[in-house]
Image 1 (tube, rainbow, N blue to C red):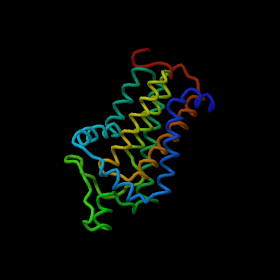
Image 2 (image 1 turned 45 degrees about the horizontal axis):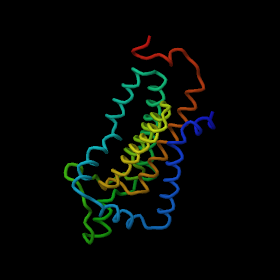
Image 3 (image 1 turned 120 degrees about the vertical axis):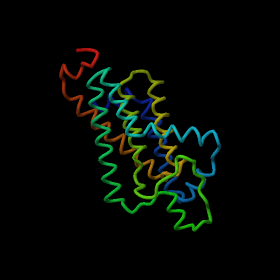
Length: 217
């Protein structure tokens, strides 16, 4: 089944894995602070507005709306997405509050270590918080959501579009200085892996109920 998943979702997985390899190289090659400063300097009024709202596609409210929508399409889809989103959220919060509890978000990190020598560009109405930076929860949720959506559709162009949506959420977290690049990369991997495992596990079972929906009894 794993081979079929990769074959059927190359439009999502190949670009994603390529980007992850490139970003991993960047993270090893350059200091995360210099990376963040470079990204932070690439701002405009349009992108301030765009990313301020696009970032909420990785929010829990949007995830709930998405799962509810899937209940009208097919229960199997809703179950896979719902479980993957819940497990992703729990995993992220566990990591944030245990192993990586001391990781500061960019704004407080720069205030402490740069003492005003570099002032981050932030967006009014989307001011970042200070603690529990790693990994990025919104990025993890976005990849769990849009990767699961990609698994449910057959059109390659739509699969690729879902990848773009998820990547933009991840980038928005860095653009708005809620997270460093490493936080977003780790978040995306978390969401992807958990969604893939959930998809493979649920699809081992055949049940007529799974193929029904709120519209199809």
